[in-house]
Length: 270
Image (cartoon, rainbow, N blue to C red):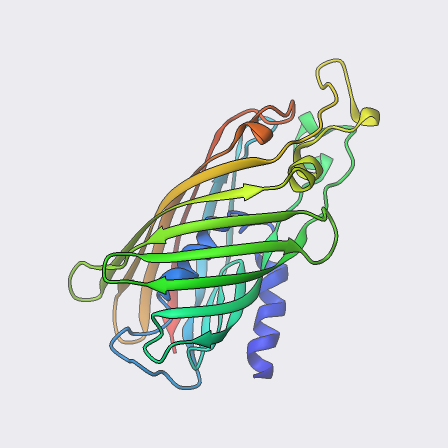
């Protein structure tokens, strides 16, 4: 179990600048993929994928540029009880015998920014990255998997809360290929929006008026893919798009309503 905890702590540091997109972490949690072969009903010990991935995402503020980075790829399970998926992980506290209904708790990374990230943020104070603690429920049906989450900033960087609902479905497209489309929505309270997208009076400029963020709802959709190359190696990829609500888009530092994250990686299965 110490190995699992150490891996989580290392991943928190490595992925903090990449995996701010909450839908990626939620989709992998809901899909329980691709950490182990779904033909194995009761995996024992540690299992998962270790490798590297290329992540490319659009900024919604400043020059609208993209950020592209190569990072380690870590997806792990422990006895189908604990898990780590890209930017977040947790444990299942209560679950039915067939695992169709689960209740759990975990953490996810919430990335911040600093004024050096873009010229349009000059003169603004750093918005710190933080760690959300969450409670979640997962219900698998024959038609769709439903995931519900409640998040709270446990490091008190923004003192904010969020609630999300996600629908996803696994499709086996042949030998070794699996696709997981998903749609979701997340409500963020005014404290969270104001911390990351608000403009304080002392940060105003001629082109940047003061702004107090308000509660908002973001919607998103995505497609995650998994292809098993061999018994030991697999390819992973995905594309996720988020539409930000007015509480965020109305901020003078935000320059676009939509952002897209694309990733492609390969890893060793164990």
